[in-house]
Length: 378
Length: 123
View 1 (cartoon, rainbow over the protein chains, first blue to last red):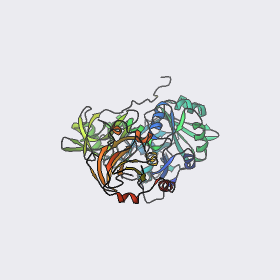
View 2 (cartoon, rainbow over the protein chains, first blue to last red):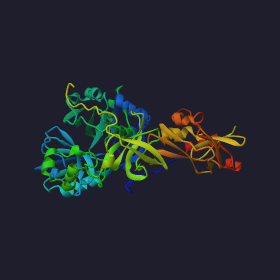
View 3 (spheres, helix red, strand yellow):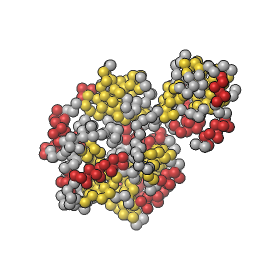
């Protein structure tokens, strides 16, 4: 028995340990290489962990992601030359999902940008953080300061009981709404909290000093509502939430309209342009893109995974970029790219797995409704 | 009925000229939650070390190899409906397929329970 090889993420650089490495191992985490780090793929099992997050609260270590701090005169305007979001309109304490674009409008990374008042915080994907830092340094004006904050780790607490659990440690967290952020103090440590995440559930991301991570993780996992959750469930949760994963569903050959991320192109930016690849992207917004990222409901039980080719009859029309068994759906699901004329929900197509055709239906995403808390008291 | 093990974590129970094949408890523990099993068709000709079946966990698809040469006489149809049997009873109800023994001498190259345990402990 052996795993059927998929594309690996390993590079030539030596795999690094996260600050919480020993904690993960003590919790029974099975460690694998991911984005240059040893990371827990699972603790008790992907299925149980996935379902736990949908009902309770799960703690994820996402310290492999890059936490960047950017400041300087006209920093919002400078960032707007690289991303299509309205960063100037982002109020202090608010955050926005955005995209780092190359000059052709291709996606270099997806990221979260937070207005922290005196600076902007940017969280980027671990697998491409060094490329992102290089790109930002090269393209931001010299009077803009970019710091890569490696002294802080990043935890995500996700699930309907996340707010109850986190409020015991940091009461002000309960006052935030989705995509809002604040600074706080825990045990004398300066920390930052945002109501955000990548599972489709309500939840928080907490940035805190490396030396505080173990105590904070212990304090959360001592609560009945909270269990540690590995990368495996993080992937199945975000897939059900219809959220793309960089390097799989997004890459430099894909622009935001093709990726069905047009919401990340703010109204003012659509009118004014001035972001990388604006000609291509605005053209796709006006006329539709030739291809589009869609969700796929898979008939039967056979998982359809990344790389599976998509067919309409005998014609190859596209490819699956993420897929697998979806624990909360109870069936296999996938996302992939199809031509515009096949992107309408309800369109019947087929995926090819080990020479066999598997019936799929194009569907609107998310597969599981988002449960973000957008209003206080709602 | 002697049971043999491979270094690829298959087990094979030999009963005269036929055998039953599955994956070990160690293997199912490594794979995690199993969501799909593809067993070979009856009549399929297998050769030792060649692809015989596919087992899919939430995370990934894995090949299961034929422990010896032979012809498939039956696939475990229960796994289609309930692939999690491989997690709950890997070395019993969660068997994958039955096969004839093309070359009994190949069994001599496999491990017994004790040797397999030592093999796993060393991993």
